[in-house]
Length: 148
Image (tube, rainbow, N blue to C red; front, side, top):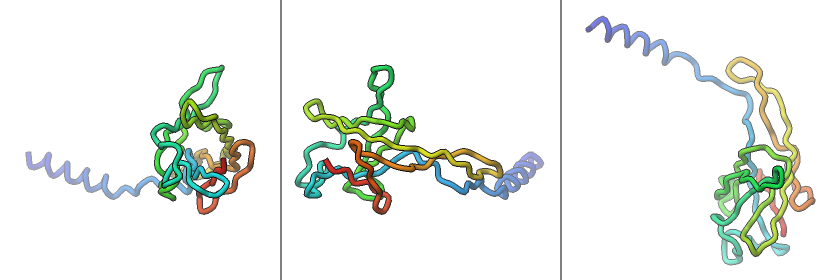
């Protein structure tokens, strides 16, 4: 019994000395945005809010079917914004607020790059450009501001 415990401690010690797998990149599958009106008032948070975060859906069209394409949650960079975590890196997605409001379009150009991870090459994605309703948007501190 003592030999088994001693052998187990040796294996545990060697496994703890193994360095963690490191990657030189971050695989992006999300964007953060704020949705505002022409005066800069937030449509989702604050006194000018018109929509609730839990009613927003990001869908993609595929063979004439609407397929949920992202989870929607409060922004991590800016708590007055939204974070869309995409399930599929689709080029075009549609933001639905409710049945009475017309949808908006978000077009994302995803770039495929190659980085190093766990000692070998691995492909990853970054965002090259974003359009909101056919208008190119540049991020400010990692957050895209979508003006309706």
